[in-house]
Length: 133
Image 1 (cartoon, rainbow, N blue to C red):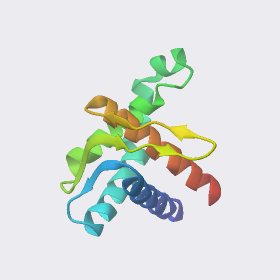
Image 2: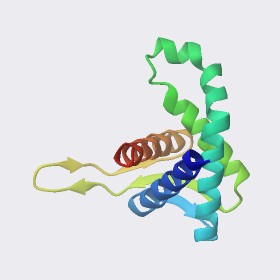
Image 3: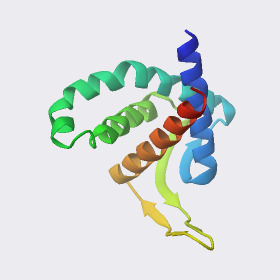
C-alpha cells in the first residue's frame, strides 16, 4: 500500500511538472483532474502496463527494449479514455536555449504526441523515483 501511495504521488508530481513545461496536457477541472489522472495512471501502470508488455514482448526483444515507450503510450491513451477531465492535445515544446545548449522547438500531433508524452512522463517519473528511492 505504501508503494502504491508513493507511485501515485510521483506520477501526479511528474504530470504536474510536465504540464508546466510542455503545452498540450489539459486538466479541465484543475487539481481534481490532476489527482484523478495520477490515480488512474498509477493503477494503469501497475495493472495494465505489464499485460501490454507481455503482449509486446517479441517486439521488445527484437528492439532491445526500445519499444517499451509504445506500451506506455498505449497506457497513457487508455488513461485519457477513462479520465473525463484529462486530455492530451498536441505535444508543443517551445524550445530552450542557453549559452551552452540549444534545444529546438517541437510540435507533434496524434500518435507521435502520445509517444512524446510517454517518453517525457516516463523519464521524469524515473528520475523522481530514483531521487526518492
